[in-house]
Structure formats: structure tokens, C-alpha cells
Amino acid sequence: MKTQANILIVDDDRDVLETARMFLKQEFSSVDIEENPEKIPGYFEIKDYDVILLDMNFKKGVNDGEEGFHYLSKILELDPEAIVILITAYGEVDLAVKAMKMGAADFILKPWKNQKLLGTILSAIQHRKSKKEITRLKAVQQQNDPFKNLIGTSAAIEKVKDLISKVAITDANVLILGENGTGKELVARALHDLSKRSNESFINVDLGAITESLFESELFGHVKGAFTDAKADKMGRFEMAQNGTLFLDELGNLSLPLQAKLLTALQTQRINKVGSAKEISVDFRLLSATNMNLNQMVNEGTFRQDLLYRINTVAIELPPLRERKEDIPILLDHFIQIFCKKYQKPLISVDEQVIEKLKVYPWPGNVRELQHATERAIILSEEKTIYNADQFISSSAASSSHTAEDAVTLDEMEKVFIKKTLDENAGNVTNTAKQLGLTRTALYRRLNKYGLG
Image (cartoon, rainbow, N blue to C red; front, side, top):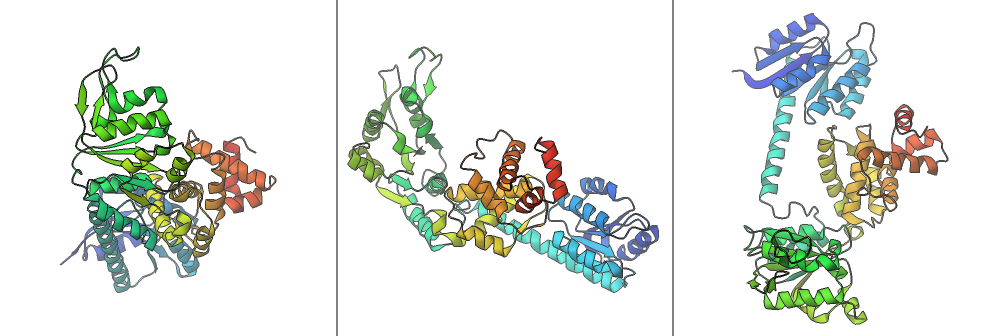
């Protein structure tokens, strides 16, 4: 009985193709052959291939393997999980090993023995099935996991998850504390997802972005004609969160007068829309967050103690990344998978020595900084493995003067970090390329592109 699998063989030698197809058609349900590697993308549009057999060289007299590297990269761009077995001559084994570091699954020498070829392909198919099953199980687990975005297994983050589980099922008001970038909104969403209100709305309000003049209109709503620009009735965030969860982020930014208005609404659970005398009852679960020390602010007279009591039935404090460094490899792997998929790159690995350096770095911007640093490293990387920690840390340190949010485009972001690194190396292209993890040629292309040459 034939194994159900789609096989694609790409080689410029017609005899090799026909011989391989005749043998493999006896063993597998689908075997396609192609002499021109440029046509590979067209095959991927038609079928999902379990294994691709790829020759290392296609031009007569050329045996440097560069074509194999090129088309291997193209295949992995089309499908980062593709299983590619290289077809190579005996003298090209070193090239095949290099290609495996780039993402090839295995290689087979030609002329091959049929049973050796069959065994290699069957092993590759089993490997692909295992990878698919792991991916499927992870997806199912994440779908059912309210902590799917709280990445980490350290004692510090597990303590946070445990507290979330205990508090979420209640209707207690929760104050979430932590430095910028630690994931306070993720905690709020996990609390909502585990609560009795999970089927209702989760309304996020960034109080730091609301001006004093718009505070009441944004939170309580307004009626048509309440002020010059009120051309229609507007529902406020309190009303939007009815029966659900209201998350007030950046709470420490509120002035004392606005704190008083917020406190009144929370105590009475009733609001008046701006321009209306009619009271509206509101019912929601309140979650708040800040990176400020509210107890200190109370002592300084800049935060109301009665409001702090109202919002702080339970406090959840998120640890900074520097206090849970054992989670950095897990977070790094998570972000690499996200950004390699986003930018259609083969999965990139990070050298162990680089990971150790990342654990030493203090990460003042916490998980958000690591996320942005990983994105930049993926954008700049042209290799299968990152061996230079500066691809993360220099870019990350530079973000204090020019963050990802400030950049209009990814090109602008890349230009900024290349210019900064070039300046740090006094214009030395060789050192700059090494620090960025680029070849000199790749760096020259970018310098010309951005007018930095």
C-alpha cells in the first residue's frame, strides 16, 4: 500500500528525475518532477508538499552549491516548515552540511541506493508529521489557555498566574502594578477571560491619553448638543462595559479633580452623560493598572486615598523581566516565531552565547523591549542563526532615543539603527557589518538604499 504523501523532485538532470519518479511512484501517492527550479513557487500554489528533493547545482560545470542555498531559502520562504532533502555529489557533502544549518532536513548522495532514498524520505515524512502534530497541539492548547499570552514558566510569573486564577472568578476590583512593558493589559485580559463576565465586553481605557476636557465625555458619554462638537449622542466607556469588564490603564496620570469624578461614579455605580440630567446605572468589573507608586502618591497628596481603597481590593504586581531572566529564552522563541512568520523568513535560531548575554542585559523596557528588539533582529538578519548579541541589545538600547512607535516605517527603523551603529564604529563598514550581523555587501546595499554611503 502506498504512503499518502506529496513528493516534489527538482533536478536539472532528466534521467535522474525519471529514475527517481519511477521508483518513488511505487511507494508514494504523488510524485512530481521539475527541471527548472524557478518554477517551484507554482507547485506550492497547487499542493502542500511533504518532502522536496532539491539538487545542489543546476548549471553545467558549477558545483559551489550556491544555487542550492538560493532555492532552499526560496522554499523556506514559501513554507518555513518545509522538509527539504538535498541531492548532492560525494564531494559536496560539506556544502550539504552547511545547507542543513540553513534549514535543510537531510541530504542524500547520488548515485543513491533506492532503499537508502526511501528510508530518508520516510524518515523526513515522519518528522513533518511530528512537527505538524506539535503545532496542532500548541494551537489547541493556546485556544483553551487563558494564559496563552503570559509567556513564561519562572516562579515569579507562575505566582502571578496563580493569583489571577484565584481572583478572576470573583468580582473584586483588581489593581495591576508593574513597570512599563511588563504586560499589565495581558493580566487584565486573562482576568476577564477567566471571569463570569467573559462573554461580555472588555473595554480598555488609556487614561493617560484622555485630556481633562474630554474625560467625562469619553468615560460617561454625552448627548447631542451638549457642546459645540457634540453632533450626536455618544456612549461612554462605562456604558460600553455594561455587564462586562472595564480596564482603566495608566490610572496614576489622573489629576485630583478627575479622580474625584471617577470615585463618585464608582461608589454610586451611576453616571450622567454630559448634557443630560438622566442617571444611568452601570454594572461592570473594574480592573485598573499603573506603573506609579500610588501609596507614595497618597503620601504626597497627589492621589486620593479613598480612590485607592476603592480600586485596590486585590493587587497583582508583575515582576520586571530582569527578575525572571529564565523566561527570556521562552519569550525569545515566541517572538521569533511570530516575526519570522510576519516577515516571511525561515525560522531563525539564536546562539546559546547570545542568549546568555541577553539574560545579563537589564531590559529597562521589559518584555515589550525584548519584543521590539527581536523584531528588529529578525528584520536585519540574513543568516539562519544569530551569533551577535548586538543585533538585539544595541538596537534595544537605541530605542530609548527612537522607539518602534516613533518610526513611520520598518525602512525608517532600519535606517536609524544602521546609522547609529555606523556612527558608533566611526564609519568603519567592516565593524558595522559585523555588529549588525550583515555581510559587507548586504550593508553596502542598505547604505546605498538609505543614502548613508
